[in-house]
Length: 57
Image 1 (cartoon, one colour):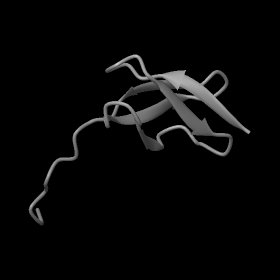
Image 2: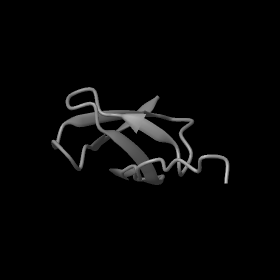
Image 3: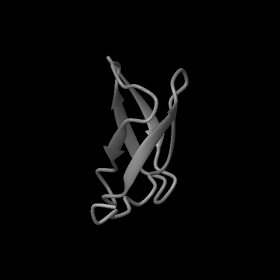
């Protein structure tokens, strides 16, 4: 069983698996935005932070 939440970027429906955990990254099937699961029950999504290069530092 999966839960559905709205994409904060395009307002499209995003299915999140029942085994999703807080901090997991999912993609919006409509706009392709990378989203972070910020809460479980009910599922809440936010735009995922951009990964920063550390260049081995």
